[in-house]
Each structure stands twice: as C-alpha cells, then as structure tokens.
Length: 77
Image 1 (cartoon, rainbow, N blue to C red):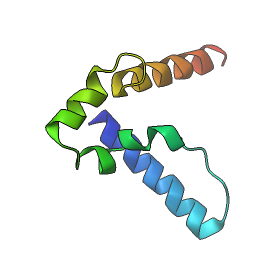
Image 2: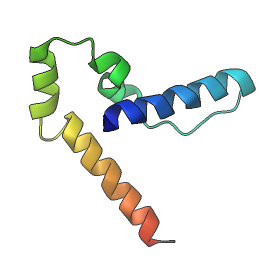
Image 3: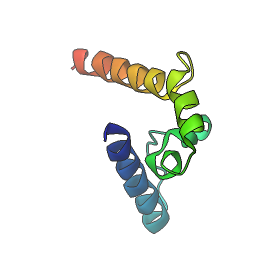
C-alpha cells in the first residue's frame, strides 16, 4: 500500500506539471519507474518477485533509501 500511495503522489505531481508547466519533485526517477504501483501491478508474479528480492536495486532497497533520506532531512529541521 505504501508504494501505491507514493504512486498517487507521483501522479498528482505529474498532473500539476501538465497543468501549470512547473517542474515538480519526483519520487520515481527514470530508472525506478518500474516500482510505481501503476506499472508494478501489471507485472507477472515472477517479475514482481525479482523486483522484491534484489537487495541492491529492488523495491525494498528503494524504500529503505528513501526513508533514510527523509530521516536525515527531518533531523536537520
């Protein structure tokens, strides 16, 4: 569900960019588009498992890195 929420935020960012023409802050860069719920949900079970088990470049590593980055930003406040 967390990935779905992130994808919803990304969709809102894209919609604002299209309406206002202002560059937004994206959660998913070019290399991580496959982690978006809208893409992820259409993959085969084997492809999903592959994305989850990859410890360095998988979906859990992505979430862990994102949360660590957020933690650093929050500590600096």
